[in-house]
Each structure stands twice: as structure tokens, then as C-alpha cells.
Image (spheres, rainbow, N blue to C red):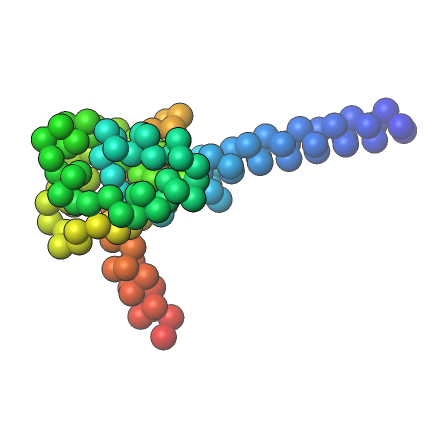
Length: 144
């Protein structure tokens, strides 16, 4: 009886730890398509932002400008998302979507977006990029 209880407890602990590790990387969805909220930045600037710590990374990402992200060298580096103080680069298709988004947005900085996609390590395989404010407005209209 003790052995069976110990085996069940060990199995439950293992499953709980595995689930927690999967959820830590991408919020509430360990696998499949999910949405991440953060700031759209070029990889040249974004990959260095987390070195200052999570809070400062988010402040820097919020202040990062559209103009910088569209400069030739920055644009050539590709794009990504600063979320939770970490930088998540986009795949090539996602970088192309981000470039189109940046060319069409009127925002000069504080480019907060929701990115829909799947994870491949730390890289986001982007399926869609949406302005956070637009998404929040649509959700508010649905509620009331």
C-alpha cells in the first residue's frame, strides 16, 4: 500500500512539474497556438533589452520607436516581441508581418501588440499581429 501511494505521489509530482515548466515559457498555453502581449521591436535593439533586467527591458521596449525599427540595419535584423522582460524573436514570416505592421501603424513608440503564433524554442512562429488597443476595444464592445 505504501509503495502504491509513493508511486502515485511521484507520478503526480512529475506531471505537475512538467506542466509548470511548459506553462512558464508561454503563459497559459504550453502547446499549440497562443497569444502573447508585448512590445514590437527590431531584433538588433530587442535582443539587448533584457540585459538591463525585466522592468527596464519593458520600459526600453515601450519607448522604442517605429523610426528606429524601420531603419535599414534594424529592419534587416528582423523583429520580435519584448514580453515579461524577455525578448522573443520572430520567424522570417513573422518579421515580414511585423515590417508591414510597422509601415502601416501611426504609432511612433509604445507599439504594444498581441502576437498569435506557436513557439519553437524561444522563437515565435507568428500567425498574426494585432494592435492591443484595437483588440481590447473589440472585446469591450462584445461585453457591453
